[in-house]
Figure 1 (cartoon, rainbow, N blue to C red):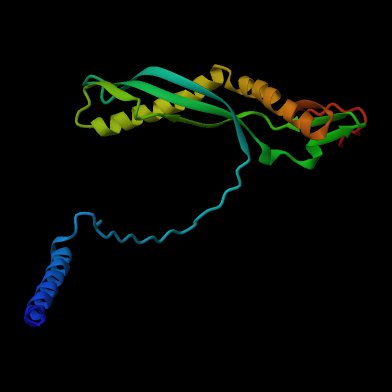
Figure 2 (cartoon, helix red, strand yellow):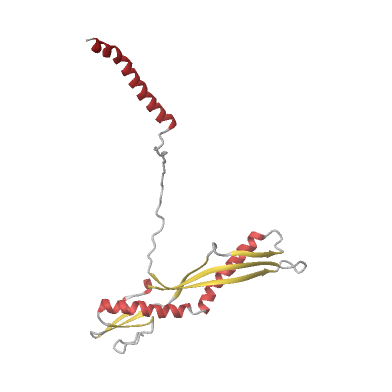
Length: 210
């Protein structure tokens, strides 16, 4: 019985120790944070849909360019011209816009042939990769560095489109359209497919429009 009496005497101290330990852990986690507890992050979104666009362009070829552009601008007849030299990396992409395709552009001839008049190939976009381009030098900018660099980049970007057209991007787009589309359409229709430029349908069975 003395042992039981001793336990009863110690019980309040044991409970007091447990309560103190629990309170210490709770306060420690609340004020100092547990090691494995991640900070709370609150993110609010207010996304608004502004425009829905119908996309029908099939990209068929990409031309990549590197160019050294020297942009010179006359400021006055009395002082030297401003010059900016760029090392430019750009690209242009050729595509066919299928939103321009209509029912009148598809002609079935018998059971074995279908003739499709494709829209003309076009340069669907062209751009400068500013991460891979840089200003090589500037001369006589007369505190107009930012404006001259911006102007020179605009000129370089327009030149990417012109260079792509001169390099035959439209013709290559047409060739790639033939390679990509013809087998796919023949598999779908089970017929021989003839692709021709839009407005140039050659079909003797169809009367000419007046």
